[in-house]
Amino acid sequence: MNKHKTMKELQKEVDNYISQFKEGYFSPLAMTARLTEELGELAREINHHYGEKPKKNSEDEKAIEEEMGDVLFVLICMANSLHIDLQDAHDRVMHKFNTRDKDRWTRIEEGEQ
Image (cartoon, rainbow, N blue to C red; front, side):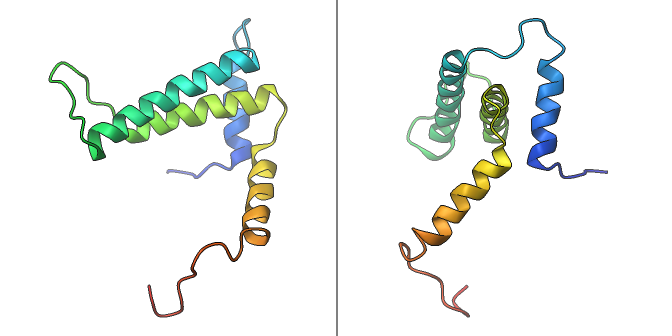
């Protein structure tokens, strides 16, 4: 059975994983570097799949999905280490989009979809 996890469950799962190691979480600066590194790997995969830069024959095939998972893992690590609830962060961002930016984009009218 494939149960969908809440953001809180994802954050707890990552925390449980990291907590088993003496080193614990990296510093925020180190995690920012890791996040940048993982984002670069995701960008490379996107470029290979949708851009003008095909892979070399010697390069391994990595899924975009796997690279997004790596970005998410590091982002969760960073949030956990800074005691940030990502669900709350998401809710704040959605509130901003639904208030400040509500008229920024052209809405799809009923029946257009």
